[in-house]
Image (cartoon, rainbow, N blue to C red; front, side, top):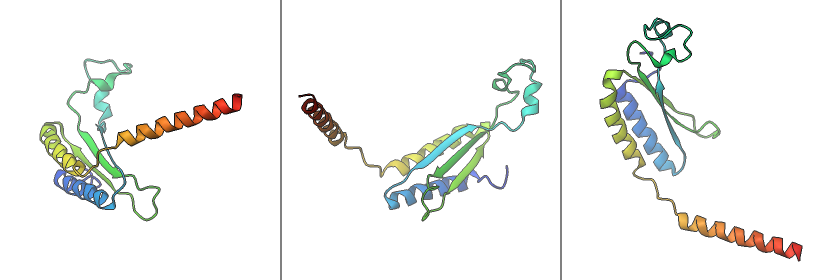
Amino acid sequence: MSSSHLSHDEFFTKLGELFEANRQAGKGSIFLTQKRLNYDTPSLASTPTTTPDDPLRDLHPESPLPVIIRASNGKWKDEKASKIKLSTIVQPDALEGFYIRYADVCKGGMQALKKRDRSKRKRDKAKKKKGSGAADGDKKG
């Protein structure tokens, strides 16, 4: 594991802090991404179930591949706040336990979210349709 990646405990602590900072600011986004970490490509070419010219040979690895989990706030345009990037690598045998704890941290961070008021949005949309329809009728007449 590289020094730029956090341990699981550090990742969960900092992710909780990131959710809390966004909650206190009252706005902002947190981007959570995950993907398979494919850093051992030479072994993929030697997989016995595939041929070297198979375009989908990376779908049949010899052993399960680790997953990289990333979290970031979207502060790249905001000059006052700095962008925060977190990442950790999860080995295949630790995925189940990691996802249980990951779900708990994410649920905790999302508890303060406000439910959208969609009724106001629908009313505004209806007013715009009526307003634009009347304006078109006046121009034709």
